[in-house]
Length: 239
Image (cartoon, rainbow, N blue to C red; front, side, top):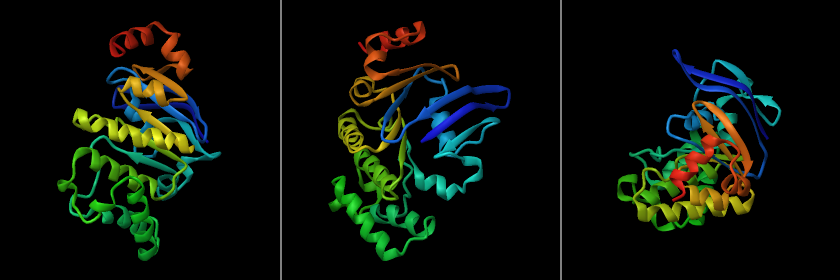
């Protein structure tokens, strides 16, 4: 379980997260949506200890993440970035193996076996020896998802995972994420793909100007949002 209590974050005089309170249960899929600049990406990067914060607390399974090593946080909470974040000088296989060996101190042979298995699950068996520049955008994002999954995290966070993809590539990546939702993987997804969000989310978090404006079950949010700001947002993105 992830619990966020009274979280505040600023960049200088600019407040980007304001009194965030949120509980994320294991095995649920949450979509965080809202207009650009509302703090969505900053929030998930803060959850994963990639961003610092000025006040408040974040708990992972009852432990304050400020007291946990970054390696332990990375093992429990995986992250998938919109720009893939792959090592350009390493093969697809080594993009998975290297973090397991260097960061998580796994035996290289075991890490290689595990990585090959994970890549095969996402249809990347024939691309293991390629470098990122030889892949399509959809393939790169599936490699990034594989890299996050190979450490068997409790939660997987996505920062607009389809925003850098060509339109025809979007569907294949969303299928992977939707499939993971059915396996019970805990997921938090920042996305503008509202039709996908409606289909996959257990709950929707709507943010605006650094605050959580609304937390609702998916069907309730899309059928009858509680706030005027959320209604205005949906009227523009659900056409």
